[in-house]
Image 1 (spheres, rainbow, N blue to C red):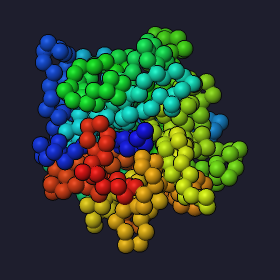
Image 2: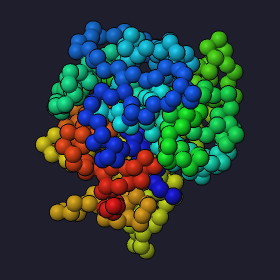
Image 3: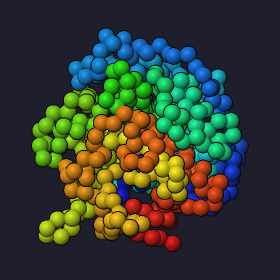
Image 4: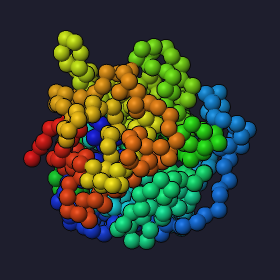
Length: 466
């Protein structure tokens, strides 16, 4: 089984060079594949990119919900609910009344350069393909699934998109000052799955969205696009809040669909319940050495649905079922390589803390990957093989592993010589590599993937694929 890391977190798959070369338009709404009227008659996605350059500081009711104190395990449920309430009106329209959704009018914006990856109806792109049923064995997943995701930035957050991309998006400004988000910036990401209730009972009653897609692990389809129903599983709400979370400056929250919660006046929105919140990496808790070490910067909702807790991250740190925090890893040991299937090796914040860009060498881009990987030896261009398709990982809990589980502010990069991107993985793992390929014709060092997620460039295990 292919490792799940390739399209995890707020990032996702990098498309093939051919697809990127087909368009140099940074604001393309989709990949050019449009369903016929016989297939679909509703509205199509339109990229929202008229970024504001200056916005007044927004109200922050999530701070008031916890008495303007730092967020903690005790008050995190109130904080998460306040965040959900803050985006409720807009998200209910986006998710459940799409005919009346107008992102630009409502003040929500998208990152440029992802048009070659977006399907036409909702502008979604592959989040992860494919999730193996073994990850959700307890909750009854019977077929592999692909997830599709869509990210929006609010007006406050979009100021940073303006600072980085300007009006043309052709010459991004990658500096520490340009990449920092203003206090109160909100970013949301919706995730839908290709399995319905017939293959995963937990999706019964969830919101269905038609997508015009090719990649579908559930059916094995990877060629001609078809209009296919997908089902709402997860909604992430992320906020820049250095007062509540001074160590990292960010609070990550995740909502998941729970069919066992009664729909109230707001319908399915009432069934989107918190999975948890994370505002630090808990570096003091080595969850391999001491699995019982308490997490002080993480709250998991004990009432969250079972399926969403099956894929929590290392030491049960927050990670949604879309986010790829469990992977097949290879670890060096005295007795030889040890292969660990579905090992917990990530979390929301640990993944996003690797968001950085080597502006002096954009061909290299992200020096470290999203997940713990053994780095190349001095002078090498690729990391050593770990036993494909297993990821060559540091030993869980080791010093090299803990590099991904530190608390750094968004101004401090994971690797010296890179520019920190303030936890914006969409920028460094997706938009900037796509920009680099489209404007230079060269493959980015992360490697590209085809539409099934198979690596066709250099991957971080050192394997070259034609």
